[in-house]
Image (cartoon, rainbow, N blue to C red; front, side, top):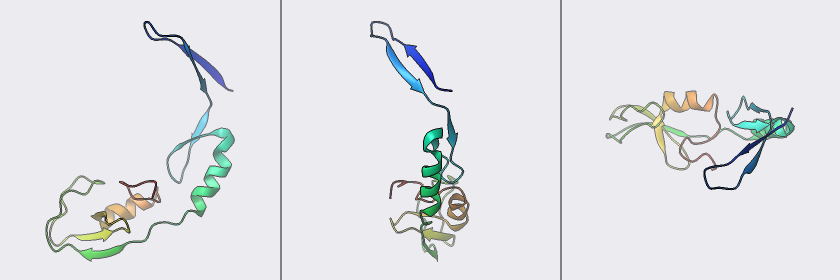
Length: 107
């Protein structure tokens, strides 16, 4: 069932917003309108997971944006094609529900 929401801010003209029930994609976690779910789901499943090179970090390198812990010398890291680095275990977990770089999702 679709619905229409009418709202207006103080001193502004009323606006109409159409609200379509949707679903959360189990592959990329995006909200998708129900009439687009099948096509979106097929596209997500056919998109390949990014590959990466794993390595042992030679020196401290800032923060892993997935777990928010420091990337420290000696940590096993994953370097994506975009050159972003993460703890290997963090990006492996990320790739279980996403198929893109956490910092460059459109790549």
